Amino acid sequence: MYQRILVATDGSPLSSKAVSSAIELALSLGAELVALKVVPRYPQSYFEGSLAIGPEELARVETQWAEEGQAVVDAVKTTALASGVRVKAVTARSDLVAEAVISAAKKYKCDLIVMASHGRRGIKRLLLGSETQHVLTHSHIPVLVLR
Image (cartoon, rainbow, N blue to C red; front, side):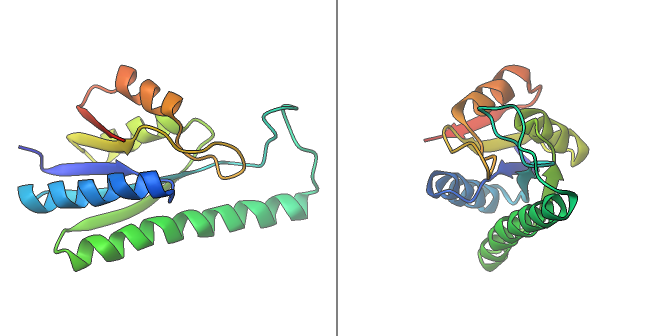
């Protein structure tokens, strides 16, 4: 049925439920899992349009976000491997979460996207219901949304 499943995660408890379900599905189908965390390109305030910070602080924040994003997908990888599921842990740098999810699904030739219906937004730029809706309406492959 499905050979490669992309699971979009932000590390939140709700997203973790989607990850668990994706691992179980991949295990039952003998499918490979691609764990994706979308990391924002640079800090922004959504109320003011931007946040003025120096280049050193900008570099520090971007590095911190990249490391935190990698840690999220590495945790998924560890869990999936312990369950016997083949997994690839990837991060994508983008301020457009839904587009990054769809692009990663195409890039890794996934035939299913699994994601949570709600998350958080802001500094951590986590997946929101609106991002999920965007993926649902723009993806050309099936999307499994979990609550």
